[in-house]
Amino acid sequence: MVFLPILLQIIIALGILNVWLLRAGAKTAYRGGDARSMREEFRVYGLPVWFMFVVGGFKLALAFALLLGVWFEGLAQPAAIGMGALMVGALGMHLKVKDPVSKSLPAAAMFALCVALALLT
Image 1 (cartoon, rainbow, N blue to C red):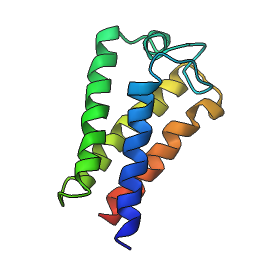
Image 2 (image 1 turned 120 degrees about the vertical axis):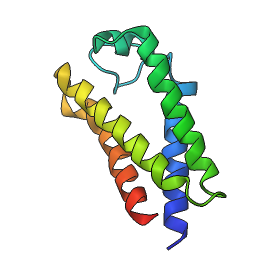
Image 3 (image 1 turned 45 degrees about the vertical axis):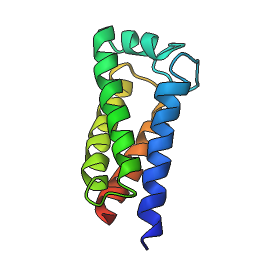
Image 4 (image 1 turned 60 degrees about the horizontal axis):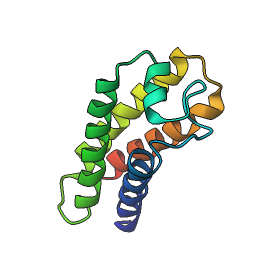
């Protein structure tokens, strides 16, 4: 069963890295409101641009901690809990702007993966 937590760590980390490093400026079906980029999405939520950098910094740091947790025992669980907390915030923002449920699915899925990982480690 050691394989499953490592798989979850990699899936969560690569998903976050993809969204925040590769697709931050791209339009996706999951952006809040009618936003076409990460910056616009934070505006839709009524959050300042500087907060996007704070959230992004935390998400990237936690994603790297999840990857490092493959080799350093003890990193994965706190990183999963932190990432899960950030996903609760993401879900809250989608609710705030009354997005359809479909836009919340990636955050909900990531939250579920984080909970599973936290329980398995």
